Amino acid sequence: MSDKIKIDEFTIENINKDFNIPIYQRPYAWTTKEVEVLLMDFFNAYNNEKDYYIGNIVTYPNNDKLDIVDGQQRWTTLFLIGIIAGWEKNINLDYEIREKDREFLEEIQNKFDEKKQYQDINNNLIENLRFIKSFFDDKKDDDFKKWISTNVKFVLTELNENIDVNKYFEVMNNRGIQLEKHHILKANLLSKIDKEEQKIYAKVWDYCSDMNVYLEEYILKDEENEEKIKDIRKGLLSKPLKQFTGNDSEEKTLFEILGEDKVKIDTEANKEINSTKEIYKSIISFESFLLHIYKITIDDTITINDSDLLEIIKIDNSKNAKEFIEAILEYRVLFDYFVFKRDKEQKAYLKTIDIDNEGTIKTDNNLLMIELLFEITSSKFNLWLTDFLKQVKTQKDTNSLVEFLETKDKKEAKKRKADKEFEELLNQGTSTPHYWFYKLEYLLWKDDVWKDIKILKSYNINNYRLKHLSSIEHIQPQHPQAECKEWGDCNIDNFGNLALISKNMNSKLSNQCFKNKRADIEKQISNGRVESLKMLLIYSKYNDWNSDNCKEHYDEMINIL
Image (cartoon, rainbow, N blue to C red; front, side, top):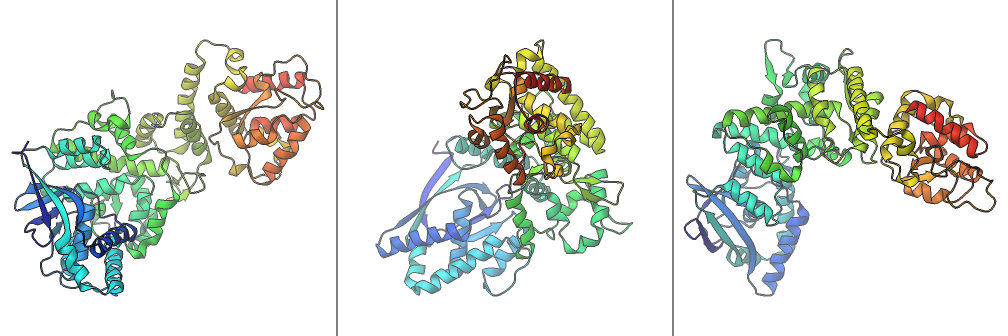
């Protein structure tokens, strides 16, 4: 292995090499918190007259430079420290990831003006430079600055150019290095694309990889596009790779727009965009999304399992790599508009669009509710999304999409039911499959049965959403209190006597009698929470709960199912 890997120990003072942050790396992500920890470690070692080992920096040859394969966050931070410390020999660092950031780093090697308002620059770079300057100003110790360049040591590992850097990524990942698999896949795909085209494909990948934001927040928040938002939205949906500029003679693809540096992600002026990352939560990971798109566009025989991402996705040439990344962008736009996310309160949020009404955004509750039924009753990979996204690609009318998913659910229900009778399936008490409760809730909501629930008069049904619940409640308790009325001959585990609710609500209701439970349920409704329409239907229709009422309710629910 010695002919393939060269390992040496260096300090900043005696290193004489040029480095490059390659395009397949993620942008600089360290915040002032990480920088403060590093500087305090340096300062403590300096006071104790000890050397400090910053760890291993792994590189790969790239013409006359060394690409940093592992350790770019630490290395970029050292570069920033050197700028503020004013070392005569700074670290020579090129930065391929984003052109504006690259130009910024070149500019500040001469002088960093902490009061200047830098536009369209990775905010972590700017904030960390300011923090480093304030840290040094606070210490007022030039010897400390010099000590960092002479006593902070690191091991430089240079991989031989014959080593497959993608395989190295995989090995490091398997050994527990914090490198997400989609970063490895990104490096693999970009290595197949011509160098002059790599930047835009890398940028598009980075935009799409954050599933917890809306791409629209990146694109349409650009001030010069504000008056054209409606036309752009319509363009995004009718032609997902088109972005209309307002000039009839000039038309740009969304792909091209994302490749332009004017699109803002990290700037101070776009805090609203950054805050979006904290608000929404995608129902699938980026790795799972990639597998859905691969299944749709390349190999429909794969089994989606994000732990096997690198073993499943196999793309062997530039044409296929580019087409795959373009498909990721196209389906990501459709995903944002037609698949719900959750907000910071965990409330489901769907940003659908009415194409016939000037691109006005509105939420379609019918589509949202059927999606919730699938998401709640599916595995974490949400396998239904493959067929759904294919359908969205060809048919964007929300009514048709609802019909598509309802038909798909009917087939799913038949599989779950198989040849069993409903009585066998549903009358299992706490062992009753939760799917049937969720499906019934959807049908009660969709068929407006909730209008008969008098107890709901103070509740806005538009706020009702299917939600993850985990506890099956017996309306007539399994162990009733002494004052509870006599029950009768209906099985206590009969589906008519059951409702799916939260664990918290189940523990509140406990073994109380029917009428006593009503007070807790009405209080929950007055607080704006509804967990089970089935249960509320019972409390609205019956003043007493007995064996005969239970059988009647059972028959009604079976007919609906």
